[in-house]
Figure 1 (cartoon, rainbow over the protein chains, first blue to last red):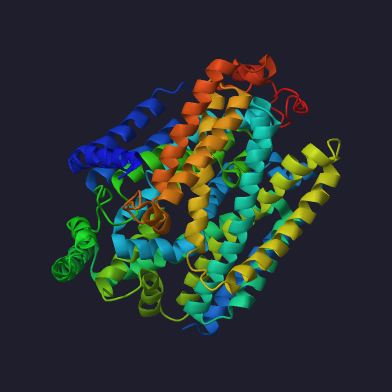
Figure 2: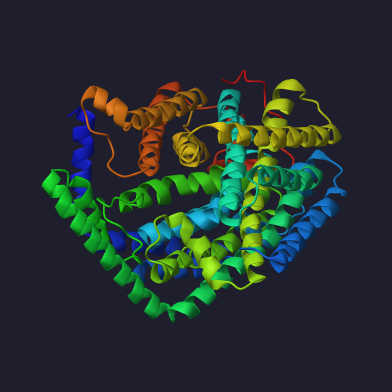
Length: 62
Length: 554
């Protein structure tokens, strides 16, 4: 096994150790961070928030 | 499968599209009209055009097929693979590009870096777009030949003449307004299948139940095969597969060891954080239509409207794949799922509407790549290297001649590909090739816009280092190369292009940062094109604030 394969294997094992509920939380929190960023933009904001909220609901359910 | 009422629906749609494109074409006067729609395009038309361009003819069938095979995880490409990047594009990058008055992303990169970066990326994008035109024509013609028993050669020729005709006459304005109609056709045709399919299945809850039953049956089949495989001493792939089968077909997040091409690290790091922003912020075919908006505000609004529409797309193109899984669970080929569903659900006349939706998806992608490739040839190559003082009306002629040349090239390339013995995997190979340079190109663009320290010479090395990384990873993943060294392939999933893009981006970004720290900053003129200095760019009339120098600023 080459050093590149060993490096890949260690990353794969690290990612395998992350439980899927934590991954779901990562996806949702990323979208929440995006929502907060849009809300804080100085004076489209509401349409953008609607699109992101739909995403948050989708990734919370599926 | 199709009858006269179906053909009447298809003919009406095609004639309507051609008339609209032709009418717009008669109003073309200058190169600016042709390449940017005279900067008079409304936000609502651009937003729908963005969505239509993103969904190709093969996607209408292919996304449903992928949902049939792997479940809803394919929807990530339309949801987290679009919406966040479109938001960042709308509020940060698109207004910035609009204000600089550029026609193309490579042109922006010359303002920010140098002519070499511009030329490398212009050639990369042009090569990809030109080849993709032929591939889209061929892949869709093959699909039409299989589904409707149409002659594939005639499909290629008719599509090329129709799309080439209105794009050559009307430029970006014709592309955007016909895309708008095509977006409506596409959504209408797919919505029809979704509604009739859900009625047939008995609603969403019944669909979920029947899909889970089909998944359980599949898992049992795989477990049975796994037992046989274990006896034969080769159970690795089967056990991987059964790991994936434990997850519901409606799950968006798949584990690392899924045999599908959609494991969550690839989706999150490769798609959401790299390939998606690279596509929505750095792809000329996408960005160009927003640069043709009536104002900076409308350019932003077009992206927000597009993002809102994007929320709908997986429901109408991926969920029908799950409906097919519930109603027709025994299909061998996932790509047969949607056509089989259309055949069993839609009555005469309405099948024509679905075929029109398929053609709309195909034409809306081909016309956009055609117009953008012509823009790159005209602006980044002809105007930059052949005739720097070219008049706007002459540039219009160059654009039209280039469009004609690209149509001829696309047809010839499609015929060449069809003559190859094994051309079915060509589409996937070219998507992988796009991932080779999209990651590094995005690293150079992102750091160029956000960081004053990014240096032009470092950007050239970073681009090449990123592309070399992709090529190396791709090579080490080829079974015959790995076998030569006595290794196993580097990645375990099919089509690991999402992983290539992560590493290519990271290597390009690291090289750019490290070398820039040693090479020093760009000139004050070039640093105007950094986001934090954008108030120095005074042009809001659509013209570049200054002509770029001739490469001596390397």
